[in-house]
Image 1 (cartoon, rainbow, N blue to C red):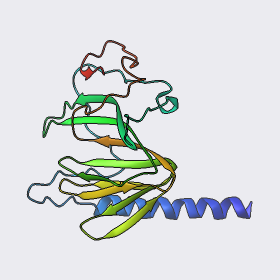
Image 2 (cartoon, one colour):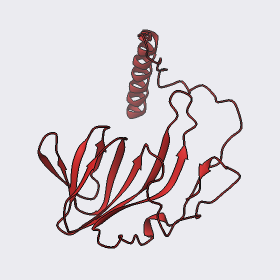
Image 3 (cartoon, rainbow, N blue to C red):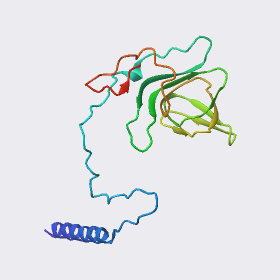
Image 4 (tube, helix red, strand yellow):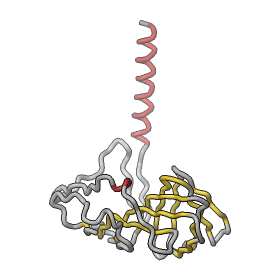
Amino acid sequence: MHKKREKANKSQITTSLLDSQKRKFKPQSQPHSTPVPPTNQHPPKMSGPLVPLTVIKGAGHEFIPLPQGENATVADFHSIRTQTNDWPSYLTSGFYKIEAGPARPAHYTFEETKYVLHGQIDVLDVATGIQHHLVPGDFAFFHVGSKVEFSTQSAGLAFYAVTRPVKAAHPNLKGREEDHGKSKSSKL
């Protein structure tokens, strides 16, 4: 009985603290910023029809061949012209595969995020001279203007998302998007 009462008192104290914090919350508007609602409120509802997902089953299990004489390649498997109102762009995703061999330079004219899935990918940041050794679970973001060199002592595979149209379609995933009535994504 005593433990139940103690638990009830803690619950009341927590509720009181949360209520007082809610009353204190007063969004401060700043020029050129979007107001952020308190976390207990839902975002505004979107108007318009619901849009189904795009799914590519087994994308991560497909073999990615390297071009003749190359030790690295990209394999884009999905690209879409974004429907955002503020700043439409492309959003393309795929896999980056690299094997031991010469360093692969890249100078970015788009944003990219990479997430290492297998092996190791070494990235030399030319701006700082720092060599990053990326292993499974590591994430890297490349800004417009980033200049890097990719290499590996063995092999590496990463998932990426970039703000550019398709560059090199994944040869084993062309036409594999499940289509449920959505026609805005570009088929590879």
